[in-house]
Image (cartoon, rainbow, N blue to C red):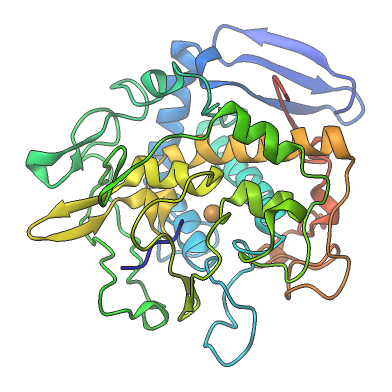
Length: 374
Ligand SMILES: [Cu+2]
């Protein structure tokens, strides 16, 4: 079984409808403020949910064969691999995981998603973030008025509550999509059911817990952004990126058909980003086998809580740069698409040049900021 997870000076503008956003007087652009989910008003939650659902009902401007929401899922599906070498049939894949571009790639990705939210809603909606270490976050996020709850074991672990429940939010992009040949492990179960599946804390026979404050402090304390060999095996003592991405302790795992075979028997602790995916998605006993919850797959953005999770990842990257400076590595010599000035695919269509790691180290160039950066 294979798993995919192992500002400028601003003027505040507040309204009851969209909450607080700020305007950058230099550009007249609205600066989106990404807030802790705990700080969202009922209206802000409703606006976010409504825009997510509108994306599902809007054709993608990039590819008419799919809706706008699924476009993002598809990009993410193509953004998972653990080798940058040739000869693996992976040349069309995007460098977004298990390499230094993990953080800048997802930064551009979230920014494009916020642009999409604006296009369908007409509002400057900022993705809220899930501060994993706040014990009240889970109870605020997984509610009937926001992300919905855990999967129902009597209904195949389908999500049956909230706005994204079975029959009202259709999952169409699966890990067995048109690049299935890359992911042809006989035991890979991509769970192709047309609804969201979750299994909180259920990961085979392991106990899964969210990252702790101490783990986050540890990660933020790592002085080096990333180091050779620029992948999931790099010692996390010299790779903030790998520590935050969460492959710590996976030494000895194997890259199989471009996918890291993560956590084969027991969950290893200290897997920051990865463990949150696993916490939500679980790997769930079903019909005598195991199915993988959506959040544990390459198509994890199928689950809207993906965005809230990744806003926190991005916030922690900002927190790291606040402590260590806006530094990035490698400048050259890293995997294709992950060097400082490499264009990160598929974002070459962006005409403003905000598609390289160097171009997005400062989030203010993308007109957003966080309410709190630790
Ligand atoms: Cu990702």
